Image (tube, rainbow, N blue to C red):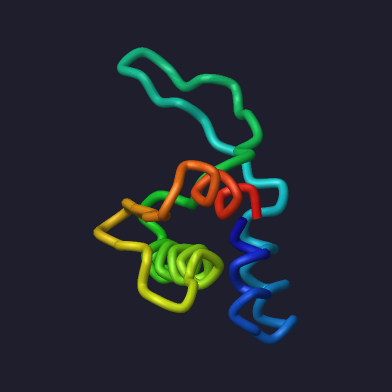
Length: 98
């Protein structure tokens, strides 16, 4: 999703590659009071406590909202929520599928 969003907003390829290198092959562990788990690959989400994460979140939300825009502002953004409005249920389903 991050790569798609950056490309959708026409970020330069070197920048997309640099950001994606942070996430490619990322692994983590779960810490508990007694011990740490074995490491495992992180397949979704953004790195926690990264200074880049808020910016990447905004980039993804901007690219998503750009895809849903039509002639009038039929989407509402608030924090991490996206509300889509359509005339009919079929129109809404069509827009989601696109």
